[in-house]
Length: 254
Image 1 (cartoon, rainbow, N blue to C red):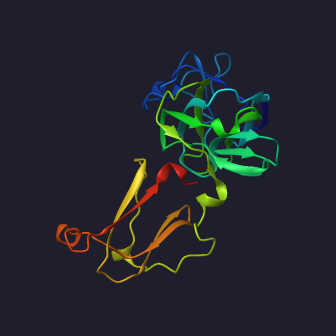
Image 2: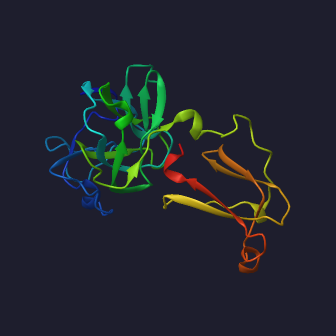
Image 3: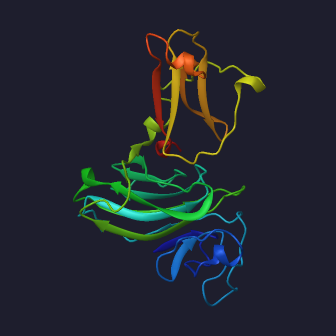
């Protein structure tokens, strides 16, 4: 393992430190795990002590060859684009700040937290990269609230051990058309902030309505957009022709 920056100076952390300070259990497997908010490794500090969200850095594994179709791990902590676990395949510059898979210099998103200390299981389908050299990297470059990442229990297997995710090419995670979307309508009635806690965001679009822009912004960056009017009422959804359902996979977003 190669650590850079200050985020990993007390890693791995020992025991269920999140529960020790009164938060939800981190769901660790075994005695040690990675948690860049934590400041207890069994020898320095004490259970439950923290180092804040300010430290940043990377933790990179030794190279290995992908021989199994699935990489399984637990991930938690911040949902920021800047806090993530990524896989580096075939070299390439380490400039991205998200959960990525690099193959031939291209970046692929793997996973990040959901603004919860509890780590959730992930199975990444990496079968397309079979036989290639790779390195796992845990990245923390966020300094604001939830600017930390939790990770644990990295394994390879012949079958998925959790819900399967596909590595997403970073260019496709951005605006799909490659152009900026039309400027969305503004004002309290047309804007809503929410915390992403589900795998998919479903937008029922009224086919008979006007066509303003509906955009999804994360951290001030537009990452998805569609034109249409939300079918907010049941009678709208029953109109003929029926409304169109737009499905955005939230796990594929930065």
